[in-house]
Image 1 (cartoon, rainbow, N blue to C red):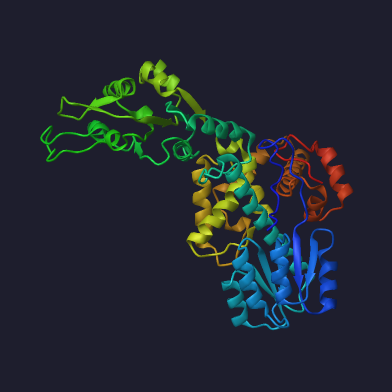
Image 2 (cartoon, rainbow, N blue to C red; image 1 turned 60 degrees about the vertical axis):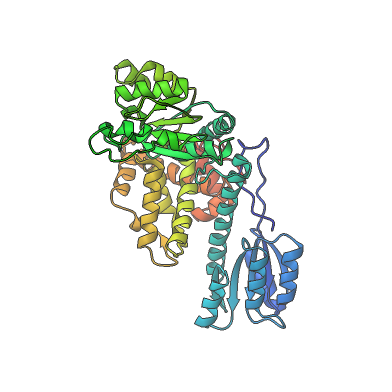
Length: 479
């Protein structure tokens, strides 16, 4: 299939990707219906036609097709059989079914076979276009996610590290550079920014990718038990030690130990950890026998370790041993261009988990979520998306009314506090709202004007008045 191109990932390759019109295969045995559909699609899509199910399947197999708009009542091979064969050939093709029969049974069967939606004839042109737009945006999102994972991971996958932010480009470069070494890594960033995901990406891309990855949350283990947790103990070495225990470092031999919240380690364990890093050996609690290990240590913290060193709470020599390669993760509020991409990804992910389809999210809700500061970062965003999916009806569109009250006031308050008077507040709202729509359309001014329900010249005038330029606002010009 000719997948929909990603929206201008300039920082992943030298030249921007040109946006192309999605190819829509129109399938109907009535020539008048085909002409009507081509007229409705206008210049936003590239239409090709077929008059039977067999011809539709043949077209899909012989040329790039992004979307199939298909009648169910077809001569010879019926629409349901054609739908099944098309989805078996390429499950990524979006199929929208049309039928003169308002049959619930047919609709359910079509959706089970993989159709995106089911519309009855005579269809409303605006409803058809709105459905196609949602389908197109979903295909674009899937294409963007696949592009990022393929380009940044060289087909190995970063899991859920998804970004189009220039700040994150440096993070991805560091992951790639350090993955095939055994150097220690220190990952810093606020809580919820994805530090463990980065650690796992370093492991999965490198020489130790098929070796153990052992994660330890240093802040979650009582200090009196931490030494045994990390290095193990011998039977009878202390009260309650009824048998020998193998520690995390021993389990991780030849692989990676991930020490989260490393700043919480007590001083006596910092000394022992330093020795492990220097000598690649340790003793279990209650033993004098050294155990040699070949491990890489990746540490993470949400506090400034340099400040902790200055206050005497963290050893300076250990700090520099851990910080061979530092990776700093920016908070979500500093990579706002990622919010829409991430939230749609999480809606899709938790929709699959809950076996529920969320049809989309309104521009108003997106604008509010883009203005929110996300103190809990990506973890908070994913938790909110999971909550919205759990509470949503199947097929529901998320609106501003579905958002928690704690998010809406903060977004509104932030806007008001930045304005000196009512006129400036209105201008600030207009500017942010227009930029939000521009970002969602890849800075396609024709499409942005259509979504804003204003003339293109009015949009250009507004952009000039509000100081909105084609670059520098987190987007790129594309129309």
